[in-house]
Picture 1 (cartoon, rainbow, N blue to C red):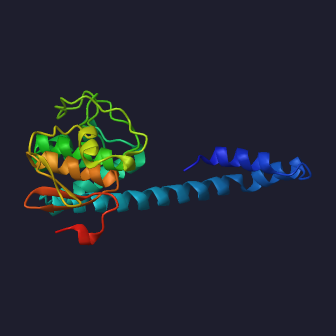
Picture 2: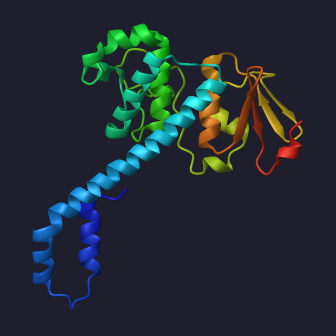
Picture 3: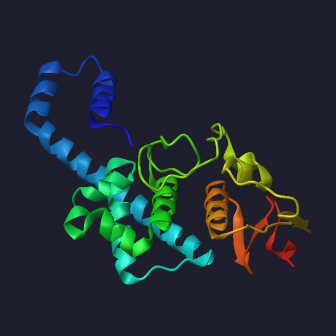
Amino acid sequence: MADFDDILTHWQASLSPRVPRAAVAQFLSQDGAALREAFEHASRTARERRSARAFHGWLDRQALAGRDFDDAQLHWLDMMRQDIAATGELSLDRFNSDPFLARGGEDKAVRLFGRRTLGEVVASLNATLGSQPSTCGGTCGVKAGSCGCGCKHPKPSPVADAEAMRVDEVLEAAGLELLEGSLSHVGGLTVYNPPDERARVLALEALARAKFSTTVRDGRVITRERGQTQESET
């Protein structure tokens, strides 16, 4: 969403020369602060709604991949979501600041999720909800210098139009190594057999961002190729 000052500048530039500038200045002097407050409130509300929708979709994809969270973990996940919505990116060192620190900090987060899973969760939430690029230099999404980043894959170059990519291109761009026999085609479907849960979650996230229709059966990620109808699936 555009900044309030940018919108205000464009509005002033669009005014007819016949509009008295003194009247504009008086209007902004009297009502400018209230307008800014209303704009910022609307912006926060819109960000919160987008964040909540994306978060619930993320939870659904985690469940499809076989990863369930208990109530304590869900509470922490929602705190992570709110932090990402406010700052654009979550790094593991943030767990030693409020609001996380007041609830046990990084030690509590590691006890709840396990260090490896915590790093994967933060990476996945950043990829889904964040607005800042990862600085780890790889595909894991954990900020450089944070514990838990064990990324060995080079970060792929940005793709101008992810929705034009094939399934294999999306998976490779996500840093997944397609071993022989891991990808097969049945009718209008592409079937990916991931080596582990982490690869399955990454595949689901990447395919969702590329707007593919996916489902999980027996641990395999089944993707309907673009242009295929439901009747194509057997």
